[in-house]
Image (cartoon, rainbow, N blue to C red; front, top):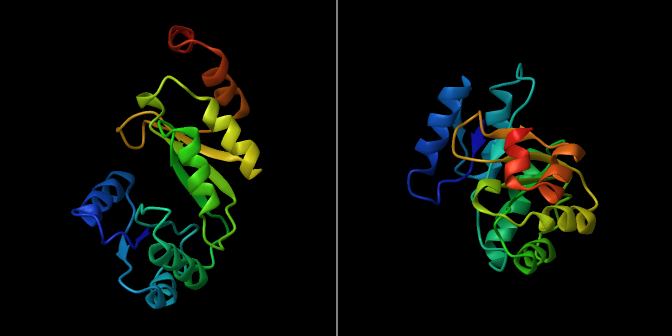
Length: 166
């Protein structure tokens, strides 16, 4: 795992804790230009994940940082992470301000903090890319679910009680 989230207090320590739980090494990216050498240190890895800082979509300077990270990392997939408890208009605002980076997947967090799931479907339709994962709590990795059409349909169509019984 690589992290460029040196912005938020204790972000690196939090990711190191998650990585320890998952049994993964962590490297800190202080400059985007360092990414190729950090990746080269793990040339035997099957997958390398790059964690980035959550930033305001309206801060163009920070959006340019994402572009730089993308250009140095050249990933096979980019997952846009959105909180399911955001208002739909706010999600649209994020989508409208995405820098010039091809988003391949959507990942929705905090499904346990909302009772309204329609935005997941709506944003997926706007973006035209699949939903990869859903998170439903703070327990890693237990609360990370692979997204499927059936799971998303269950959130859209079933009550909380019906989902608990399933």
